[in-house]
Image 1 (spheres, one colour):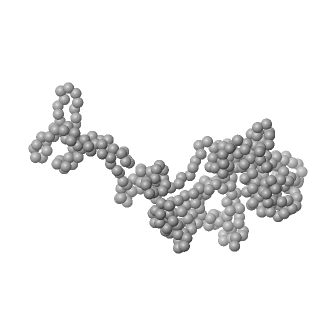
Image 2 (tube, rainbow, N blue to C red; image 1 turned 120 degrees about the vertical axis):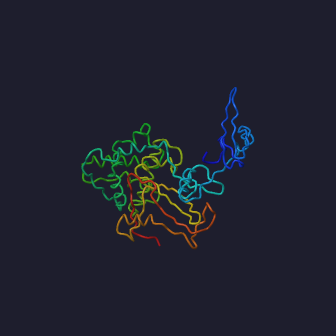
Image 3 (cartoon, helix red, strand yellow; image 1 turned 135 degrees about the vertical axis):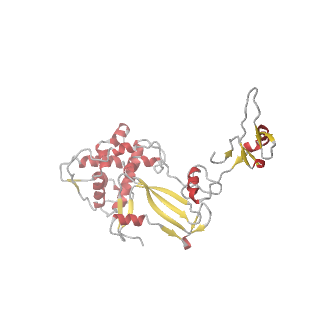
Length: 349
């Protein structure tokens, strides 16, 4: 075995022989005893030697990783250790934390294979109508136009997939079925022959979408996007009769997270013991600061830049228990099919 366990080998160590001797045992009628001649000329019975050393055969042997630099990584991999030498799977050693792994779901609510079929436009259509401003509703119109022309969501709505899943066409037990409203809106957008359209399905239900939203007031487009996304997510879960928490990992395999959702990894690395503390957070959009850069690539580089935790901000490691210098970094662990980027032009003081 490569880890803790008994030694399952018929070998015995003989200090007098200066090494390890193997005894060949013959069983059966008329079998002759195998003997071995030592340097001093004395003949000894190997069977008797093995019996006298029987205790060695059941002794537990603890294996430890080699300390040699050239094969330390190989041994660590075989023992199931991570890149930093900490266990990445199985039980952690006493006094040592386990590096958290990302949770994969075997049975998603809406499989990726079905989502990928919606990535391309199923047919070419003309550009739809513009949306009327019904009183400072530009925040709503801009978001609806972006969502209506996102191929996976548009194809999902044009196929009436959501309404077909609702039993008997009955409304869900929600204040506002945002996915049904989006489905009606998209169908109307791609079938309307007029040049303008009233987005009444959303502007007439602003207070149901968000308790603080009011028609006639200037609202934040990013806030409206997040509220509509959450509403469509809850409606999707209701259509498939998902009863667990809407914020659980399994719930993040529905349609909305399947199209727009990804996962960020926040990693804090202790410089004292080199242990990585990982946390994973789902997202439907990413906010990027653009004040200090002139490109999206530059904004992403700033977003994923390592932050040093030192001085009064030293990190207390959960593995070694020492409050030491550490680095913190955000990375996109799982990228979405459609990435929504919110450009932050302002900084909070």
